[in-house]
Length: 421
Image (cartoon, rainbow, N blue to C red; front, side, top):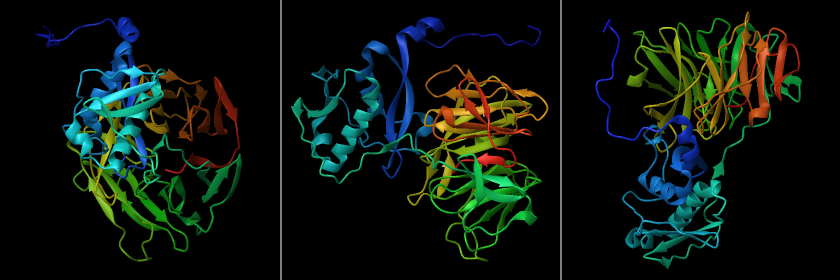
């Protein structure tokens, strides 16, 4: 009545009070691989705490969550199943009994990756020490001959930041600044919001107006990659693509990625444009690629309301971006317009303001409850290294590092610090 919505009917299911749910269920990551099998990618699910090992195994065999499909891979072939409806843990060994044909026909390399994927997934289970693969209850030998390297979990970024000081690109490290190695002057371009590649010496930045994206590599002058009315600050992925977002020629929001590394001066820079349907009508405020390159943190705005989401990045075999998956949404309370990855399951977000007190938040894939950090006046930029102790924020008073339940003043002068990525 009076134009208000009413619930006409509910789908079948079980309603549980939130506090009861938290007692019975826990959030645990199951793990998949990036397409090169180099990195482990968490896929957080909720499981009944007392029946977790079997439920985790079934979920892993069922494949990744929808927002990761096409962005990650599994060592387990499609259709492989548990041979029995239990995963007993005997003397610390999780005995995973799989359909014999799929397991026996797999190569030793594939079996080792299966075993590793299960071991990563069971990390949260204190009674599991190792994993045994079985076929119809018979132990299947898995030889670790060194041909398969264990995947990197929670990939770190280099312990340095790129920043702008007196209109020059600089390195900010150990609370000191130094010239960016082998990079020509860009003072005339008034750089802002710089980014540095985690795998090469490529850098990118916006001009002061924020409407042109530039890249620069050692030995070459800066080159304009893209001009729009507005662009998000650039973000590099581990394949050396630098991303930004803005309105396209027809006004619709587009994500654009460029790969300037290794391109000769004057030659065309490879580029890819992605326009997922779910971005229709929304403007992108932030786009940050995760450290292992399979996911993106995307903050969008529509009608004055922000949405924080995580989407998978679908790529060709050589790492060229192809598309983004339908995203999952994280709960944020402060209507943020910027954010950064803190680790593989945590992001920090805030709504920057030079004239108001700002309260950054940590959002977790493993929890629906944001964690508010200490408020601070005039915070306008945010960066994060490896973990929640390496969160930096900027105001007109300088750069501050998170310290306990507060902020510790750092250097004054440089602006827009950003870790590689």
